[in-house]
Image (tube, rainbow, N blue to C red; front, side, top):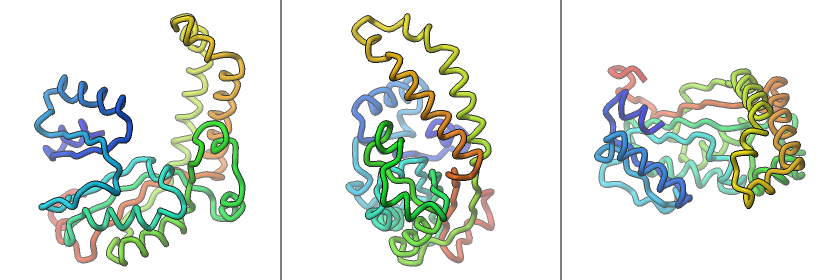
Amino acid sequence: LSHQAVKRTGCRVTSLTLSVEQKREADERIRAAGLADRIEILLCDYRSLPTPAQPYDAVVAVEMIEAVGYEFLPTFFAHCHRLLHPQHGVLVLQAITVAEPRYAAYLQNVDYIQRYVFPGSHCPSFSALMSAALDGGQAQLVLDRAENRARDYARTLKEWRLRFTASFDAMLASCPPSEAKRYDERFRRCWLWYLAYCEAGYATRTIGNMQLRFTRSANTRLLTENL
């Protein structure tokens, strides 16, 4: 995503991760692409990112808010508000969401994904996101665009499931023996269930894949740029 942003707009990107391995891999790809002067990867929690001397024109978060936690949703938006330019800042957020009628029960229970795939995760509802944006953003983050890409994500998950099934045996054969034993029949069935579970959820709109854009009020940048 950082590569595409730089190539298409010429911008500078500061990206955050908590994974040492992910940062190492990202840094190698950035150097190989000749973009080390445009992209910086920081091993940093978003809450610890210092306020820059020059505010960011945009903040983009793609499916990381699921790791934020219900009680910290306003905190997330507060930090986005802090980092963004006060006149022309734009926040783009992609979030997996739970349908409103199911959200209260979801908050009180632990589902398959929380138990086996992403322990401690939380998928907000659309209204929970909007409430947190209002509170954390001090009413300075205005929803400009919202789209549910659940149908597309259902197709993506179907393709993942089919390819996982088709390539599982070959993948297993290529693994060192010490690793292959981790990918047993239980692992295979757990992942098939996870992929099918999510595919059905998106296809029936039980869960959503919301792409939201927030901006500042009276943002004159919108008049001159194709945003």
